[in-house]
Length: 558
Image (tube, rainbow, N blue to C red; front, side, top):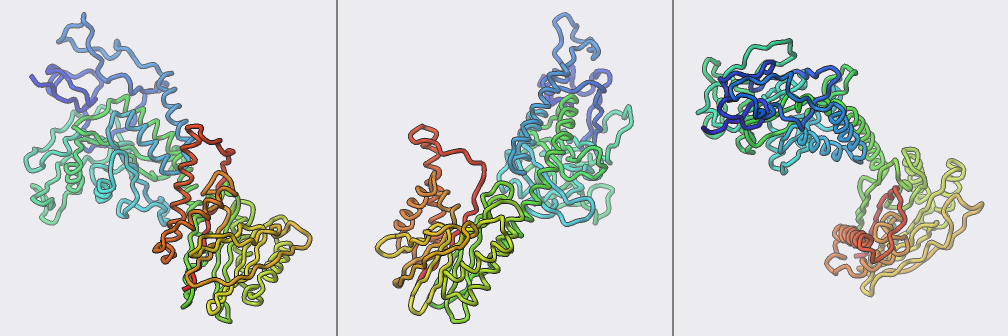
């Protein structure tokens, strides 16, 4: 006889253990789409490594039922150690996406699944969701799925058998399958034995979905014509993606009395189900991981809010002039561990000329970003009043910094451009020198002979004046771009100049393409440095956990 899969453990049973035979005492076969409670034994943690039905001993008769009380029990200390190790690994995740993927991988190991997904839902108090709902795309993090498969999973409605009330208080949902069977040829599933205890299960979604040709939902027997099976889309996606069973757990913070903020679902390639010990251990793991996920969700919301605020402090568009083309890039680093807060600005002056500036405020956190916004706004005002004199503009900015931010320093670079004559006038305060890219190559415009703003009792700096040719590029950048190109600031500046000089002609004619080209070239240089550090061909740079903002502003005379 052919072995049949057990709906309880996902293991192959011999013919004597097939459905209809005598079952062990105290066990219950799950019902398709039924939510099951987490009934953990007090003082004892479950184990995923011990099978639900241990093999019979040689001296035990084949037809004699096994006594669960005489079977070997799992070691609670090893199970707790394994659970602690899996939870401890989550603390090393740096982003929310990494945390969710670690939860999926650990959960798949615990329940013996091959694939999985995590869905983050809206908050229970009705506030706008930070990551969307099942009805909004881009809300799912998957394990073993590509983008098209995740897109198909996003179309599964919330009230289907995959969730089955998890977001309304159910402890878990088990669908042992077969989920990928043809609903037109599959009969109704048999009901399981009556429950031997209380359960917080949601109403069962055991009825198979009625899907006609082409995936169109049709009413089933005894249902009104306008009724649609909520599981139809779920089973259709299951057939398309090729999984036969699923096991789902809610993500909720224990003890806070709030609704779940997410759902974790694991999928099997064939009809099966995890053992009861695996289910309990997975429930304990998700309960412990939910606290860490909730903290990462809050951090992600704060980070996105801070990024939105910082981008709002920068110009939303660049001015358009007939004889000058402009392009900019800004890649902000995290506020918690950044070197400072950088800015860029481009302003058309009343006389028809153009004022360009980049700079960085030292420090970190939201206060540093707010100080950057104040300095940038002040510099715009000084540029309108006396923009043709870069030294006067930076001198006024330095006086304001000392009066309003005495504990801060800043670097800045200001350039005054006359599109008609292509005349440039620049001044810098401790900032990286700009690059002038021409048909003869690339060269630095030395403007960094002075100290940063706020460091000296009286700031002074010389200005630099030059005349550009048609087709020349002026590149203003912050320290973060140079450090991205090399292991040190000086090496990064040299590599940046080399990359700008070697840019093809068609790339230099398109500023947007030129900025992307420089970023890609610096990224490849950094990757080569990492390879050299690993093979020992060059010394590794000093470890620094902080990051730099990357700001790039380019102007081309046409």
